[in-house]
Image (cartoon, rainbow, N blue to C red; front, side, top):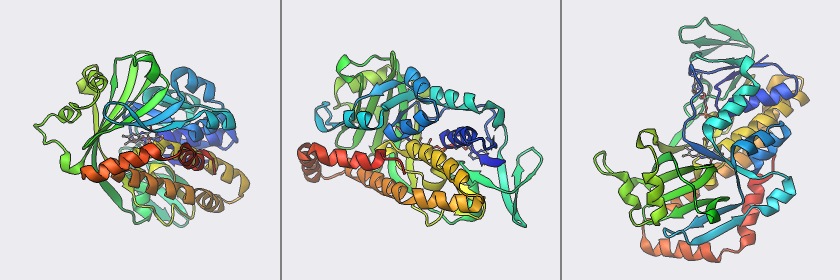
Length: 371
Ligand SMILES: Cc1cc2nc3c(=O)[nH]c(=O)nc-3n(C[C@H](O)[C@H](O)[C@H](O)COP(=O)(O)OP(=O)(O)OC[C@H]3O[C@@H](n4cnc5c(N)ncnc54)[C@H](O)[C@@H]3O)c2cc1C
């Protein structure tokens, strides 16, 4: 029996991947109810390859919207960089899907409902003679011989075993869902509009539903009394229309942070996955993608190795190099997206416009290839 802490995208997908290999697992989740945080999400090609292998592709496609092109655009939505995803669709037989987080969570949870223990907040983990004592709030303790920490960026499991450093990107992010239908040329695009001190991304995720995120850099963050939406006044009118079509009470605000790459994610029979191991800034749209890849790879390693400690080590050896590269690249893109100096910003935009398509394609290729 494998014990998973956390029923986010990483924990749920791990349980599904293990189930497919007939390996029993149980998930302990602190919330009484699964709550989707953050409106929408882009499931990139690599994530969809995993869900295809897990038999979930068609269900996700039916609930989400197919994305054919990724674009970085200027404030008037004029393209600066374009990635056409057709090549990858043909190569791997799957498409990028933008979907409501609640819909994704519902599909994942429905596959492992019987293994899900909600209302179990882990408060402490102690090692005892090669075993692990899990102490839950208001629940009896549990002695187990393995633990997978899928408990997110502030992971209790990670903090019990490893030294780690959460890095503040000094960027604030707002996310929402607009009751809106994009003009048809945007229906299958994911656009990110870069301005002087703010950026704005958006995609249609379902009929009459657009997911958007807005990011403002540190020095430019509005004070509590200032309206953050004023940072978008010089953006394309559609950006303002999207903000106006959103229920303000449901806008989700969060600091953008990541985890400085760690030397190790595993010790004996404890293993970290997803954000607990390698939280990344969302600039490559790969945080969940990497958690989903982790889940599949981990289940494969558990089948190959007869000992869990060896399986966890094999998992880390396979995944770490790709993940660290993504975390570091995403961190750098976040810096480039918020350049302060108008001259360097102009240069950046000019370089983006002349960067040949094959360079962007090669970058995506290394992200979309499963390891
Ligand atoms: C603005 C933004 C946009 C993003 N967009 C994308 C995108 O488009 N595509 C993409 O791939 N990724 C994206 N991401 C990243 C993605 O959201 C995360 O990487 C992903 O959700 C991580 O999943 P996880 O399961 O590892 O962790 P989490 O989703 O954090 O789940 C952890 C779970 O553990 C539970 N838990 C925590 N502590 C305890 C405890 N002590 N006891 C029991 N349970 C506990 C929590 O309640 C939670 O359910 C984005 C992130 C941000 C911030």
